[in-house]
Length: 237
Ligand code: DX5
Ligand code: ZN
Image 1: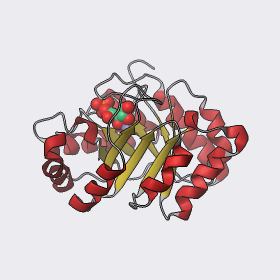
Image 2 (image 1 turned 135 degrees about the vertical axis):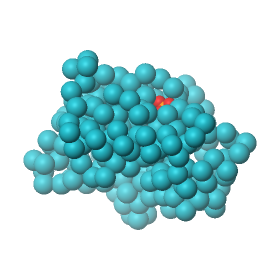
Image 3 (image 1 turned 90 degrees about the vertical axis):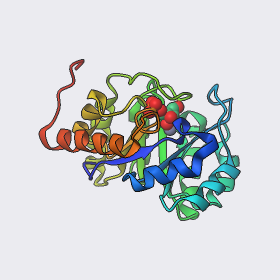
Image 4 (image 1 turned 180 degrees about the vertical axis):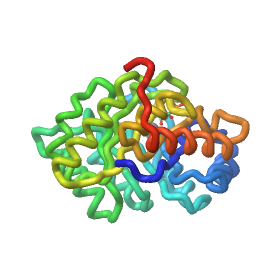
């Protein structure tokens, strides 16, 4: 909620054969987190990386890991990831059975391991359903693309969800981080979500897809800070 804009480059767009080199580049270039997209080929069609990769990343970077679990059975697999001390762990609302208390179970499991807990939702998920959990969450992630692949187009209207999360957080007297993921670079979607109160900008193709990653991070930060200060009305709004 209106903290200094933080960039979380998604390694999905990095060179997997030169990951240590690429991650060093964003560390020097001013990234706040390494965003780690775990996809299981079931919750989303794509398959990416798992626990050994997260363990390996911890050895090559001092940057905190922001682990985004796009998997069908998060409660079963969470302990494996939590062992490697990521800073933030995000589970998807769609992968949890709310009636069985799985939102609370996942958040508690993450907190018991000393990590920060976040819940992500796909663009068609009703943001109101997050409300009962807002006080326990360290971060909320309204996805701005349907998860699965880098390089997709921002879903217009995500900025309204960010604004609604700000509102419900204020009503509850809490201030979780708000992250947005998908289609962000130094562009209008970044302006729109930052004007609405987004703190953490995930960018795959917007950072690792660029020749100069440090310049890409600096460009996004500048656009984000300007939108926070001066506001922004999206052309599609
Ligand atoms: C999408 C992933 C994103 C993705 C973002 O399923 O969760 O983190 O890598 O890629 P861009 O920034 O290229 O949209
Ligand atoms: Zn992601």
